[in-house]
Image (cartoon, rainbow, N blue to C red; front, side, top):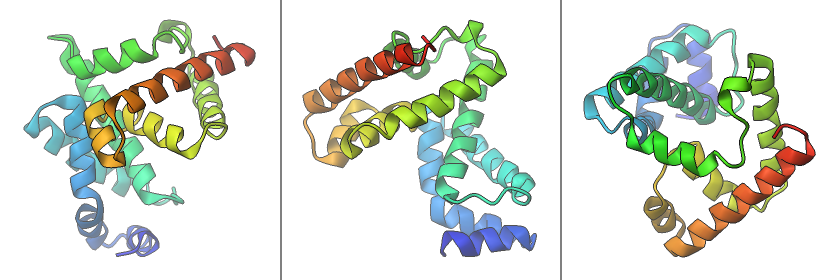
Length: 183
């Protein structure tokens, strides 16, 4: 079913909206959550929470890109679950991704909510300046939490090509954020 039809179901408060959303995007949302949480049960819970939050937020929200909207909800749910679990133990995936980006992002403890939003908007602006291939690699790695191996297979690139693309893009991001006085 097309995204606009699914969104219409949400606006009509038709419970088939959730069913259609799960059929269209369930596997991708589960995979996203699993890559972050590394737990089948937690990923399933996160996926279910994503449908509930979508149900509660559409309407009034009317996303232009349904999967992007759902992925953001799912990713935030998964990161919140991982943070909660990290009081018991650190999640290796989160630690690895955070370490990779630590040199090009400001310290999270110094950011206020308004600054976080500005940083997000600035990163989005930056990503519009890089090539489509580099943007896709960057988003798959740092938004969808895919492994370098998975990205290289999906895009038919060598792992070294993916690593060098990420390295160059992170350096460009650091320079961009410095020019914008956010770093």
